[in-house]
Each structure stands twice: as C-alpha cells, then as structure tokens.
Length: 500
Image 1 (cartoon, one colour):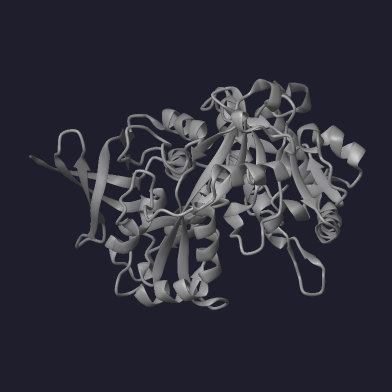
Image 2 (cartoon, rainbow, N blue to C red):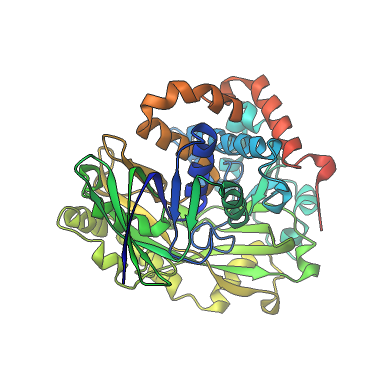
C-alpha cells in the first residue's frame, strides 16, 4: 500500500449536485484554480441527488403548502414561499447561462415544464387554500396562479384525481403552469461532464476518511482509493464537504468550533411508482396536499408527474421511514457514531422534544402496502394495486442544533451551511429545498468563504445571474423578463411543452 501526497487549490467532497454547482461556479469565476473532487461511489449524483432518491420537484414554493403558514390572527405568512421561489429563480438563471455558453447542450435532459398544484379537502383546508391564494397572488412571483373549488374545473385540471370521487366534502386546488420537473441526477452528471478539464480532476471510488489542519492553515484530506487500497493525502486551502448525509461525520472530524452542538436525525422514505401509460397519460402535474397532523414537512403527500430517462412516470408519497444510516450506502452505526460529547445533550433534548415525530415514523414504518394504497386512494380514488410498485427513496439527515427560537435540540427542516470562521472549510447539511436552491446556497458559500474575492467576482456573477443581489418580488418587470428568457433558454416555453 503506497501513500501519495498532493496539493491543490480546492477540494470538493462528494459528487452530488452541490459540489457540481460549486465547482461550476468556481470554474467560471476562477478558471485557473485547480479543483479535485472525491466521490466514494462509482458515478456522480448517485446518493441524495439521484432522480429516484429525491422528489424531483423544482421546489419553487408554487405548490408546497408547508412554505406558507397560517399566523394566529388567521393571516398567511408567505415570506418563506417568496424566499424559496427567489432562490429557485437563481438556479434557473445559472442553468440558462450554462446553456447559452454551450456548456449544457440539452436542457430538456434535466428540466421539463409541468404545472404545480396544491389540493386540499375539508372546509377548513379549503378556507386556508383560498386565503393562501389571495396572499400569494399579490406577489409578482405567483401572479399566474389560479384557484378553483368548482368540481367541473377540477376535473379538467385533475382528471385522474377527480375520477371516481364520491365524497361530498369541499375540495379545492390552485394551479400555476410555470412549474418544472427537475431530474437532479441528470443535472449533476451534466454539470460534472462540463467540469472536466485540465484544472478539474474528478475521482470516483475514492473515500475521504479524515481531515486535519496543517501548520499553514490548509486542510489535509486523507483519501482511500477504494480500487487499489492506496491512501492518498491531498492538501488544499479550501475544502467543501458536500457528501449528503455523510457530511456530518466529516464535519465532526474537522474539529472546528462551528461543528460542535450539531447532530443529525436520519429519515428514510418510500414512494409508490406507476409507469402504466394509460394511467400516466391522465395526469400531468405535481400535486401537493397537506401534511397530516404530527407529520414532518418532508412527508407532505404529493402526486408527481416525473420524467426519468425520458419516460413519464407518476410518483406518490413519500412514506416516511426510519433507518439509522445517514446514506443509502451508509452504515447502520451512522446515527450512534454521530453522537459526540459536544452534541449528546443537544441530541437528547431533541429526542424528548420530538416524541410525536418518533411516533409518526414508527407508524409509517409499520404501514402495510394495503394501508399505503388507502393513502394513495385519497388522491386517486380508482388506483389499482397492480399499477403501482414501491421504490425506496434516499436518506435525509435533518439537522439538530440549539437555536434561540427553539432552544436546545431543535430539529431543523431546511438546508444549512456550516463554515469555519476563516472560510477555509464549509459543509452542507440538511434536506429540502436543497437541490432546487443549490446555486443560491453555493453563492452563500462563496460569500462566506471568499469575501476577499467577491468584489472582483461580482460582475461575472451578475453576468451569470442577472438578479444577483436584487429582490425579484420587488422588481416585477425584471422578474417577468428573467422568467421569460430562462423559459425560452431552458425550452420551457408553452409552445415547446411536451406532454406524452
């Protein structure tokens, strides 16, 4: 077994959509920097970014009801929805830039136009949806949204969902046609393909085993070549840990103060999938419902039209589950080994606080296929068991940390960047909206870790992302212009709408 020592400018750990995005940004902003990528699996985008391991929705808050909460006075808080939508617009602009530069040739390989809809039942939920629609429609980002509680109109919008529905319970939906279906696995592979160059080296089947600080402030990364067994030591002035659920363990190895008092709680998931063309032809939308009482935000039921490998499919779920693994390819000891002296009290506090979540997960794990079918029939009354199969989705690791608002051991349901005070290392933790907001999140990493370069980089960033530093919801004309231009570049225009 030999040991290899090498130096580089930037090390990216994990070949998922986050590393792909950060690498793509850096290649444009600092083309002469040397970048090394290490991925323990054989290909890019095989874990959290894989098309079967994430929901595939371009999360733009067009249909996700958990991004618009009802305040005690009955009004609707749309601030999170606006924030998530603005962040998705940043992703669209960057992808469009790459298409215009010829770095992405066929955008339809990873993004397709698809209406986004919210669907609710029951008088209270219908009232909520109507108020939500009213609150959102005043904002330019959501101005094209439509609302209906007319069963005949809903039959036009949702023939599969409305067919065979016998309940007299009030039902309503909102619909917006500017939504998308994003195959993040395909996007990740596309980004890594265009990254390959003299200055960018991508190493698959390489596992990062340790990280330590060197005397000059660089980071030495210990890497095992899984094929040869050789140990390599690579040093860089900047390291990004984008290893999905595996990021927490690596962050803990850094020993930086910012890594303390942070834990992770793994949640697995299942989807029901239908590929029967007779069924898939009757539904063309992403339809989000409302989470059941006590259910976490990542288990909001939805019925998605997906395009995977150019084949149309319907996905329903997710059904939450529990596995102690932090990655699908991880170890059953992942959860236990993530508990350290500095986060044990945080983890215990979360355990006490989240009893309802634990109970919910146990109930979900014990669901029979028949019970899952019953839940599907709340969406599709005429669903037949022979048309649907079960697929295991990816692992999500929700961040647990101490916060001012939530106190000790608060479970976070978002995407978190943890970076060292000197900007030499950063890690991405958490889950949804994740991939959809990758460009915004990686710009945040650049701002935190390379403040000395931001003035020089800003003109180029604005060339790639015209709305950088601008609120689109406060600039309706700019939003409409960007929405139209990115729709054309990414082949999302109505005239190019593909319905199979």
